[in-house]
Length: 263
Image (cartoon, rainbow, N blue to C red; front, side, top):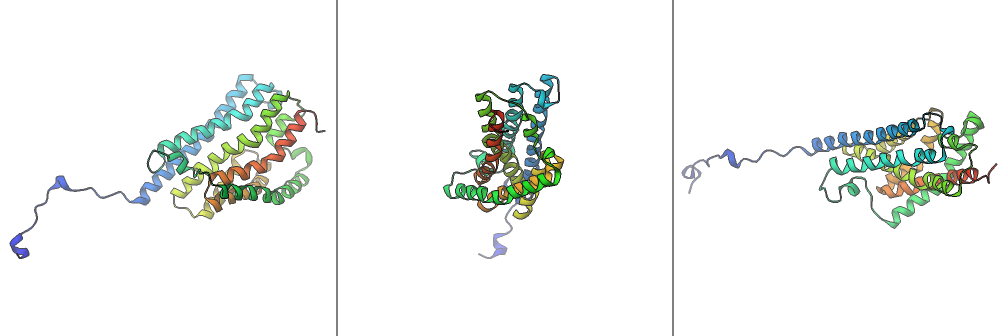
């Protein structure tokens, strides 16, 4: 039967399927949503920090009671990471099941963990000399971090000292990596950025977001091995481990100083 004999096939609008939305557009939308999630996490950290300070009635951290000082060290960053993780679960791409782990690139892989550990240890060869040069440049009296300044001259009870040690060594790096090399990194990926651009951008934001203007160049150097761990493995846990290795010595120094064992 010829095409003329068959005739045109009748068109039924009810059967028409709307054209699929272009993937790049969807990806960009997710990317901008994750940027908003990152900012929400940062804002949470700021607001909670202010609330802790207002609960004492002073913005001078050196005057805070031990409990409030520990709360200031642990609670804002942890809540910021929790807000970021929840937000990622709501606005991230892909099926809802397992979305947070998938979007934040969290997976247990011994090889990736080993790479993070190696970069963390190897990075000390870069970061320790950088810290020494920076201290010589700005002066020893200006060389401490905000955490170091807050705990300067303060002796803590053993339990409080252990909490401070664990917060600096394990908790803060985990929370910060969720925000910077997790949510923000993934946001830039959804926006179509080259992975080296993502590495550079997240490192820069990380160094600036600490709001320690004088330490910004040093923080940028410190973030290099941490960012490389995320870049080379595609696994957030690798950068978490690298960050924790980087924070171990400062955490030990803080513990010794706060227990009266370091002059």
